Picture: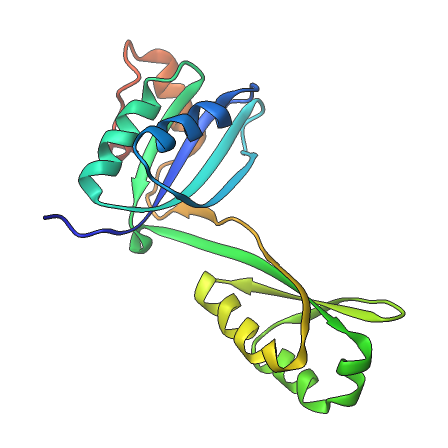
Length: 186
């Protein structure tokens, strides 16, 4: 039996509504939970990049990627393991300003974890930490004794380590008779 592990799927799409619903239907049918999701513009006008983090087997997710590639507005879909991408997440932590003022150790904790103060309000302080899920979770655990009022972590933002340029991929796709280009070509 193949090993379940964490993968990242990157999907390049035309910037049109409705694709998120189609992607979630594909995952839902296969009973695959989306661990994290990020949608953003890309360096090409009219092209969006969806970044999904999923836990499953490589075999299962290769099937998912093939299915995603068949969707009309999809320009390309790629499956990555962690060592094939550069990635980060951002986390925000809200603490009571009173607790922050009473504990000098929180300030050094913020520095030690490479976090920064995003905002200081009348009764609260908001911290920001960029890093991997593990990095942001470590800071969460360190801040737990200080009564975290709120916590949120973004979806993963990722770029492949391949030398491929999105613009070159899109150009090749436009001049090709197929949408079955391989990422290895870029």
